[in-house]
Image (cartoon, rainbow, N blue to C red):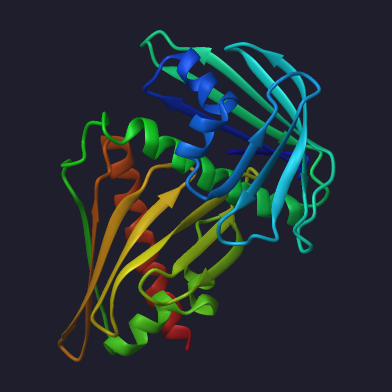
Length: 289
């Protein structure tokens, strides 16, 4: 994802389908509702000057609606975007979808959302679009993707603190927000709803102004011993799985992270380094308490 002028979002995705099928995924309501899992309503009068209306399952009071401005079959869709959510209301922003064919036979989607009202409005929409594009990726890419059984990433670190303190550091928002960062980064939000089925979110803005969201869902929680959760980021935008284990050892705690389903060597290398940095930062923050 790229941010321009603080109020424009840009995303790119590659799909294992042809460009016509990708265009249909955004233009035919019966297909649109099938892949965008969070929607309860998708009404689309797909023609220039036609309107659409979307409504979400989790918040029936929230809706998006607008008008199709430009339609070029298999190439471009442009539409206005309005929302009713009181906290992050958006009026007459503009979404542009560009579709292209890659030399591999796959297709590429470029999504640009511009003229957002504020940075808060932008932050709300980056999360929403990232989740939508994850649904798109799951629907079209998951079955054909190689590497589901790829080598796992493992990172282990001993910390001279009790398991209860380490567990709090990785599950309490205020502490998560301190250690989840990189050199030169601007810390962003950290939120955690610590229950099975609950979600978490951590993000930061790097020195180039690019917002980097990371989020997932808790699958298993054993206080002070184990945490299992899904993991998604805009850099690695499909869903993988993380198992974090705490073992009491030598009057301290050994923390072990196993990250599964990272399907390229680059993703595995990036996450190996990322988790190593995170564990180092957790220990630094715990020493300050």
